Image (cartoon, rainbow, N blue to C red; front, side):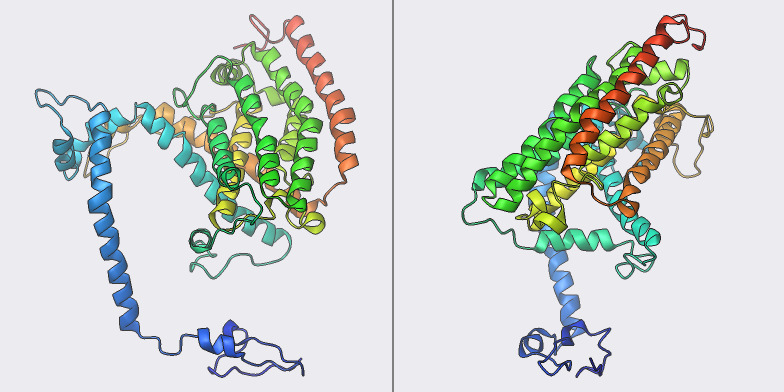
Length: 456
């Protein structure tokens, strides 16, 4: 193969539009490429298009965004400010005065809307999921002696995620002609919603949990059971053989690993004496992290989490070298984007659940000062030393677990389905039972539990 400079004067490595291989083995420029190549690019027209885009964004914000904000403010209870009655109109005028905005922000941070939408709810989980996608690419590239994302953003390709998001938004969503269209559209939304439901049960700091219920751990496993069913329904709705094979594999994988998954967490319930996730963290604060007493259960939970996430070496439901892309074969555009978002939010949820069950949750040494002073505005009413310290340690531990979950993708091959079933049914269940007996021995031996020797 002989290389030459393309008609635009650029090298073939830089001008990708000019790549075309003729029958003689020489590179040539096809007529279609010449038709699509921007021959008369003008910077003024480019700036004009940007101004036009900004204009329409402002119009949409003014006609849609502000009315929606007013509607929300009318239904959200606003805090009293002395003798002054706070109305939505006064609220918008106070935004320009930071000193008067602090009490409003302090009040909003205590509402359920803040916990659901921002922290520790969906926005927090989605941000960690976005960072995970970028870190995974660079992490695997370093392991395999590659560069990874580089060009979208001057620093290590940090804008690659934004570029991919814009690409998925702009791409056409292709629905197979024989598909069950309502189910085909509903399944990706249900996938993301189910992942968000798991996030809602996980406490990230003292008092910061969307749904702090007494049977939180049981609810987590009940919700996780919906993921393989959603994959099977979506694969069936695609009306294609490869997605359906992937959906059936997802169901088999759930059957193989669901029991050891639950049994590994049951050992934690025995030691803590509660199904409440906040109570499990507090019981570890009073004694020691459960991973020191239940290392086998932690290992089983980790392996089962990889199978639940369908990550290598347990990615049989996708298996791109065998069944194209498994149950994701017919996905395109933002349908694929929603499923990927749900998958990485689910990765965060299971990593955070491991931290809550075995690594003491938000427990850690105090690194923040008791008070914070700023020269411009007093943010002391918003600063909580305990919450800030808990959030820091919870985030660090969770991200460390996420890296541990990403690691097998770079070092492990995919296992056969018979080995997967044998591992789940014969090996992991036995290991989980062994650590259950260890937990019972620690309780009845007076080492842990109420009045135990290691309880502080």
